[in-house]
Length: 365
Image (cartoon, rainbow, N blue to C red; front, side, top):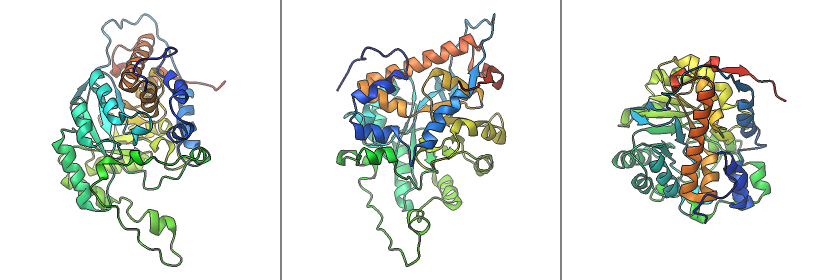
């Protein structure tokens, strides 16, 4: 595997262009795809093209920086590494390499329940800014076990994903013949027995009475908030009513996301949903954006539309495949510098200067 930055990487998005040289067709199709026809994946990317950044003149930005406080963490930039599962698909060092990149760049890492490495091993390799993404398990005792492990390993927050009870296959991954390799089994769940499949009665739905049998409910959320010792964020919010209800329930913050297009094909682009969610919860409540970010300009647009920070998902995997830990760290450096350039040219010295007035509608070419 490569351990150096290849030629031709000038912007963060170049890692996406180079990834096909470092991943076989099946793995690449799985990582790049979403579900169904990949409509929601494309919508996430297209949403950024609907906005232009307006340059401003004669602004003094010589004291500029991107430092922020988020969830009690002091961070050098508003870019988080999203919880991406099965990172051994991209590199044999998997999440350990990603954690090393996070530590080197001061980036907050969100480790997935479905990681190829244990949450303890990831914590040992990462810096102090680390959160743990949680899927509720069919047995509450197993969920509580994951919580206690995350607390003991020094994670600072729990990110509860609620929009992925059903994940339909991507047609592009099916056409490529992708099957999850045996070495990509979720390490965090190795000691928890898989729930026995309940037989369906005649006339039962494979979805309603089958796949959704263990889907989270409000009762599960209230239980989790009662037993968690760490702040709980919720990922997968797209509707303002859900945002208000989650805020009222005591959730620490929200992540506007359509799960990278992997849950409901045809779901709204995360960026399009962001302004309504921000309006629903008010200015002082933390809201993050996940979905489609490929550049510092994309991050700038998300911040202008109401996000406090953004999460980087697929681009993380592409950089990992191309150059391992060094690639992920370099990708984050490029994104940060791209964001700095956008801020400087838009006359924004600080993150708080980035407002909706910095954007203008952009007519597609």
